[in-house]
Each structure stands twice: as C-alpha cells, then as structure tokens.
Image 1 (spheres, rainbow, N blue to C red):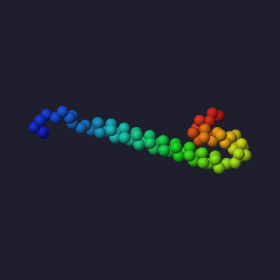
Image 2 (tube, one colour):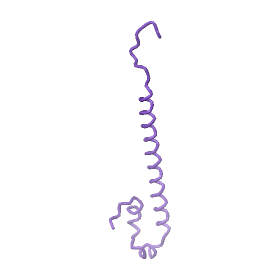
Image 3 (tube, one colour):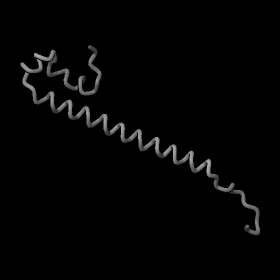
Length: 75
C-alpha cells in the first residue's frame, strides 16, 4: 500500500466484465455491418450481370437494383 492515500479507485472485476462486454458488442456490430455490406455488394453484382430481359422476367428494372441490394424495395 502506498504511503499516501490514493484517489483512484481500485480496478474491479465487474468493471472489466462491463468493458469486455462493450468491446464484444462493438466487434459484433462491426462484423454484422461488414456482412450486410458484403451481401448487398454480392446482390448488386449478381443483378447487374443480368440482361434487361432477365430482370424483366423477375419483375425488376435496372434502376431498382440498388434498392433491392439495400433491401429497400417495397413488394
């Protein structure tokens, strides 16, 4: 124990668990965001390779590809 009183409270196990939980949540959120971005990219690329006729067969127009990739096309 130091010869002077400490104003810094001792580190607690509870605080470490809270910090670890927050860090895990941030990493999980980042991972989910990257996965969503990659899914949208793959969808965008796949639909962009289709001809206008093929898009028409599935009920889409070329201008709707971005909306479909982002999951914002109301159906």
